Length: 312
Image (cartoon, rainbow, N blue to C red; front, side):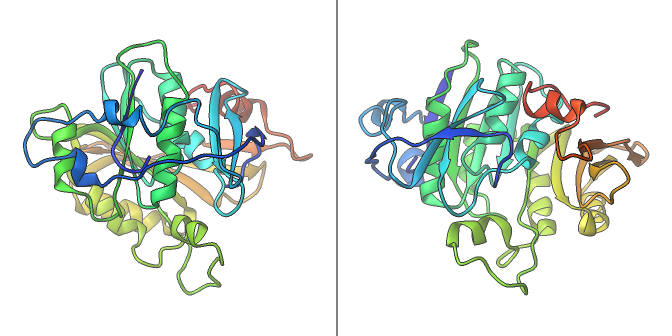
């Protein structure tokens, strides 16, 4: 697997972790690695001197795993912790070997890692606003070498909905677009009580942007016939679907995540095709928990075994 580093590079019921020691990492600027030309720059050589898979962790970080130990995964001890959303989202992406995926708001890289574990040979680029989280994602990508040499994961610092036009040079297609785009945009109201942790506030609150702005921006980065996948609050699903339709997307599917049998779904996955003309489809969805709080067998197969979402 190739791992590229383009900047200083949730709470969880399925992560296992242990503490480790201290780390020092150098930060660089996006423009140090990108130019306006079509030629992509590979900064892997300079990365080796500042960050590698054996770099010790700081006291602010915690080492753990994803997919029942298949993937090594480091995240912050406090503030925003990776939840179920990126793993569920990655399980819905219909990517194939050789295709490219763009994830907006990738966090520490859980979504792209889980996708690469399920689809050998995929190439993924994550966009993340927080500098320290960018660095952590780069660490996680380097720390998980995949056997398929075509697999390539990298992270770029960018604050959505603004996406640097120089990213076009990284997409292998002629028009600088990706086969698939995915995101779990911040959707919590900016009018509520903000989290005291700045990183958590950035990840969860729609203070500076809203999910519709993310969707509008990301429709410009997917190939015709490619997919756009979002996990959002069910409360804003209607607006998300409308934004997709207004920006040339169709064949929309809505996939609910039911907390338990008979409970109202608060979280949904929406998937659309750029240029799609098919009818709207409501999928059966996935029940996450049994009455006693355990994951259902179907949820276990996705969250621990890394399988695709059933019926997606």
